[in-house]
Image 1 (cartoon, rainbow, N blue to C red):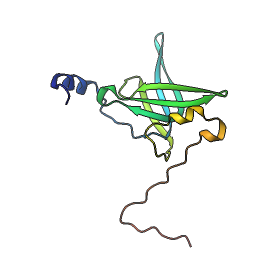
Image 2 (cartoon, one colour):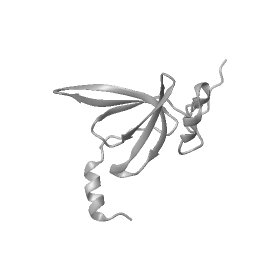
Image 3 (spheres, one colour):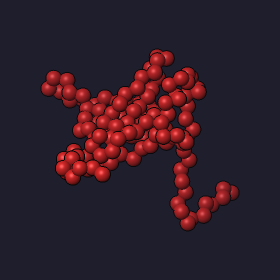
Length: 128
């Protein structure tokens, strides 16, 4: 169990809004970049290959391929520099960490798309 003092300090650092994404999802991470006095938003899009930590220490890793070379970036989940995270394509995976994608090239790096869940208790209408 965590120390009560550490927990109290961490609770002040956690964002009020949460981002709903999982490992395997293809996401766009909108990050605030400060250049001199100006602030702009830069996007990093790719597949989430891992999530780790809890509370204020939560981190996630996004991987993408740029000009045939794999690029990974680790983002702190509760950072004020992250403006938003958009899920472009939900992925269906059976692992918590997708480090095996590092050895794969081309079409082998694709992740199956997760199908939308139907509302519970409502029967699906057949197409006529």
